[in-house]
Amino acid sequence: MRGDSFHDFVRELFAGLGTITIRRMFGGAGGYCEGVMFLLLADDIIYLKADAALQVALRAEGSGPFVWAPTSGPRAGEKVEMGYWRLPDSALDDPELATEWGGKALAVARAAALAKPKTKSKAKKKKPKRSLP
Image (cartoon, rainbow, N blue to C red; front, side, top):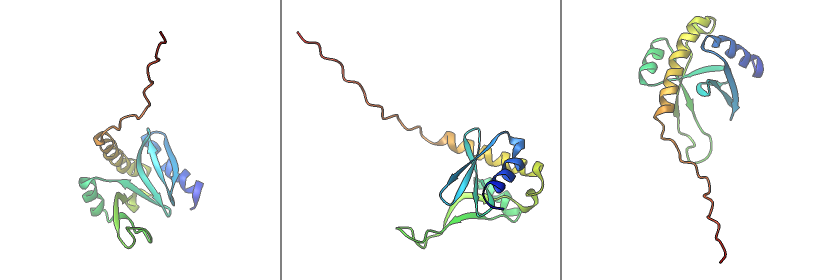
């Protein structure tokens, strides 16, 4: 499954959560619900945003983490877990189960988004006009 057909499959699989949008990024894509990224799609594999508790549950289902292994740059040769874990195989053909896992991942992603400090806008302040005498 490549490209749009895989993306269509993902949207349909998680439709129980609401409207799922897919945005391409780097070599893969992100899956969003209500503007929150909770899925990572790479090499036709679905990964869920996971905190420590969800990682334990996913590991019990035989899942593993998405690992980024850069081949160049300052991190070349490192293996970096990115906080996303593979959707269990049992959920790939079961939209109810996929929605259950997806709901947990969406809750993790929402909590992470709320925990991030808000950045201040760097809007330029207008200088007051000087009046001439």
